[in-house]
Length: 205
Image (cartoon, rainbow, N blue to C red; front, side):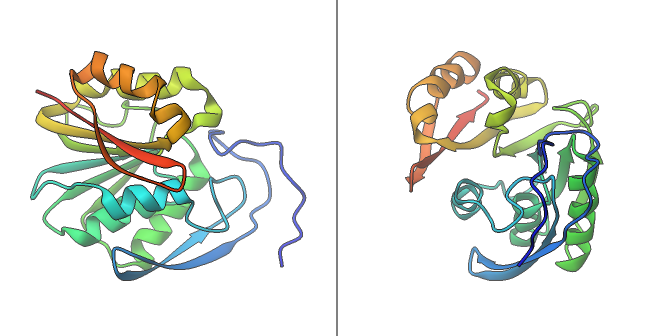
């Protein structure tokens, strides 16, 4: 049992100062075994949270191209995507330096080679890359302003016919976010819904 004191830091802090308190998660995703090291000051350090798991189990990946795991945390979404389709190039980004370090460790631990991990805020690390699919479990605790930016700025980096897939709690995903998807993409599809979460998809037309 870990008896660490609660930290006032958020998982979207850029440079966490709390002491490391390591955890190891062993789990089955998409029918395969994965292990992830986590630590204090990252999101859902004790287990794969329900929203992330729903996105992983139901995400729709292209046959080839570039995937962006936006706000990757310690890396489960991008790592599983890279495992499912080795032909994909997976870019994983996060503003949290500790999350980035853990994602790099977990990439090696799970022996996934088609992944590049970068620190950065929103889409600043993408550069001139054209992305075929964006996957995100947004930091709702950081505020809706950031979540909206994630959606509204996605078309700037998405390829034509590229998709933006976001998991969210159904309370938000059934009311607020679909209207933002419609404004941004002109469409909004519910890929899946379960346990109080739903995965929304917008396609750039």
